[in-house]
Image 1 (cartoon, rainbow, N blue to C red):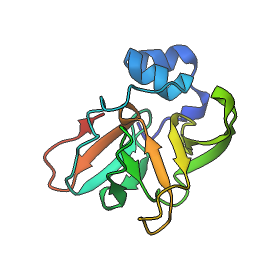
Image 2: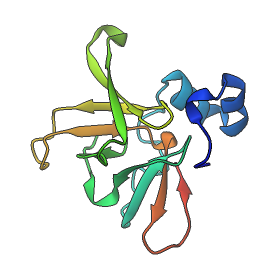
Image 3: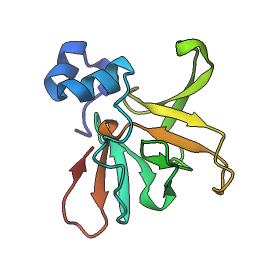
Image 4: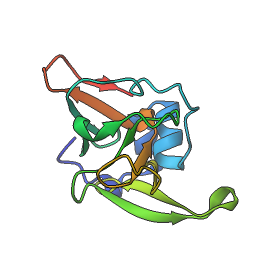
Length: 141
């Protein structure tokens, strides 16, 4: 997937690449139900990447239990994400998108004082893949 210019893909291209739920979250800025994500309780060492394009986003060491129902991280890899003001649902939030393919990942909140950055990247599990450090095979969220 690394030789593809993901920003030029059409909606039809994305529909062919992604399952229905992944398309809804990644391309339509949807949200999976809390507590349902396959990667929510993943605790192994490794890295998390964008399910749409494969760009590496988070190191497993930055993941923490935020008790919010979605995988949470306190820091993204430098340059891997971009931020957009989100005024939907009658509130102001900061949306997090993949810098490589512009897919919706989740939101960031400055409400994690227990972390080194104070931030909580609240990510949809279905928007991520996990690659364990032990080489046991990729896990799709």
